[in-house]
Image (cartoon, rainbow, N blue to C red; front, side):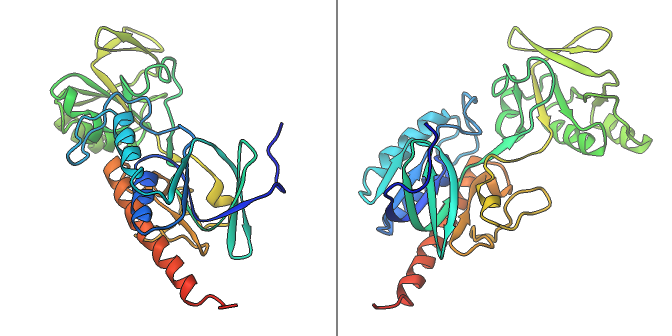
Length: 312
């Protein structure tokens, strides 16, 4: 049965969509503000396939699910916060408020809506990439390169200067990097010289697939011999995991992410966005900070609404 509008709806102050670091951080702070909050968590996370997460202060190397478990335990202290394991399928603007509809058919109305639904990376369109994603095929050197430092690595990116820049970045962790793409890279001679100075070799063959071999990956090209690498890092962009903000009429930036200020305020009154959906620095600790900043904005927005509310 398809969920539909029109069922009896209950009202809360804040709805948060997304149960990653941004959403959990915002829920914690709003709980401390004694706000009536419902957080919807559909169980999909950008770092879901990753065995460990890094760079998170006091939690470096923790399993992502363990961090979420700790955050959920913290939320139990705040009785005004409820976590619901449901997917939001649609949102609407109703006057100055919002209505959300879950996959289970529940309808909620709220005064403030915080989207923390995350970012979806564009995976390499090559064989084996999806199966090895999160372990041997990963997007973030800041998250995973330290563990494979000084080992042979591959950069898979655009066949132009964007790919060259990413490969050069990866060479910070090793002096053995090859730059691959789905077609022959077109690079100026001076760019090639700069890459060579950073010990980056440009692979001219098209990469067709990756296969697990021992503790690394074997790169299979359209022709010639395959090459073993300890890990493949990719950089192909991506976009918000949800289009809910776009459906509400929020202004987007040139990368189709929601345009917000540094405190998560969007162009739609009462709509706030935090975490990877805003496409700032794509790190869990940054997302958590953005969630806290957005929570402050949400609370102040609600306080202002209450201050100027019609007493009748």
